[in-house]
Image (cartoon, rainbow, N blue to C red; front, side, top):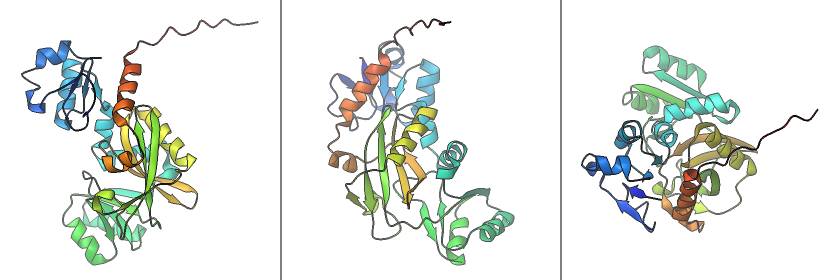
Length: 266
């Protein structure tokens, strides 16, 4: 395979991969359009031009980029595909009527989010009218979810077309993210969580993501996913993500065999 990478760190150790700085995309237009099989880890601003303009195949997939870019889009997807596994959510314009509706429907504490953030940033525990006022003064869209009674959550890692592992994360306070001091805890991931992630991936074409899932009793709740997830937890599981990506790309590059001819037996 002929591969070009726009992210040297995420493709470190992949044999035969040529690295290009993202801003060189325009200078290398002819090379990209005719000499490569895949472009790996372009920046978000590149993906539409590469895919639609040059018909370049990119990894992660377009679905991974477009759905992973915005928490609101993710939640709407989850509500459509698996409403029973989505926390109660309101997404409303920031108007006095909307704020009144939220306070009528939710009791403190509840969770408020900013649509385009990651690693636990832009996620707030709202415990009072003062907290809520501070949140809505900073945001044009109000994104409110029920507070789930958990002291840990799990990160389920999808690479290619399969869940490759997962781990639990536990923090001292509201946030469990490793980037904010949460601790990685190794332990079995419930099969329900694995199946849920694989179902979402199959339905959408997402092929590189870390899904954050909460367990309340024996029930899974999808919180969000990140297209680019931290390597610390993945490395602690002994996962070689580069080999998994290369294997997936090779399988995607091989033309599918002709389907078997089925004969009707009467």
